[in-house]
Amino acid sequence: MEENRMHAILIEPEKEPEILLLPTEGLKHEEAIRDVLEGNYGAVEFFKIQEGISLFILINDLSIVLGMKPNRRFPSPDEKHIIFGKAIFIAAYNGESADTEGTLDMPEKMCRIFIEQIKQNFSACDGSEKPDDEDKIYYDNKGQENERAFYWQEIKKPVHPGRSIAAGRVNFYGQEDHEIMEINGRFFKKVTAGVKAKKN
Image: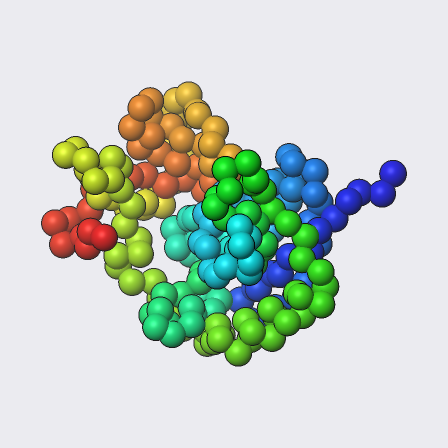
């Protein structure tokens, strides 16, 4: 039986944008996105296509921690922000209607139009770009009294990391604090950031 697939757009460092075919079935769809982006991901709403539907950018949410290559800059006035690692442009319901959710197929013709727009507006990086210090900062309990700024520092595999808690493609260790993270066979430890850490 042939698997149903949907169209999205893939951008990779040092390559031209291209059409990406993803399986539509729930769990396979989610896992295929994680496979392409090499881990868990976050979504940024880029612009509204029509009422209730927007174009989203999916990016590995640990791309900077993992040292992924610089890809493209966001359009002006946000050109100082850089996409690191691969990214997927995908159509999805944007939450304006409570009874609709999920991603949507884009006709190939629409993908071709968006690809041209991406090439024109997301300037390609030259490979020398580095993330800003504030882009490396993460937060526990953001906006609360016990807010903690930290960054992930790569470490050798612990001898006895303890019991793991899976979160998608990431395993956390360290009871409630999740002080150690494993992703793609690499281990990282939380290090409290200094007072100079920028808070958004």
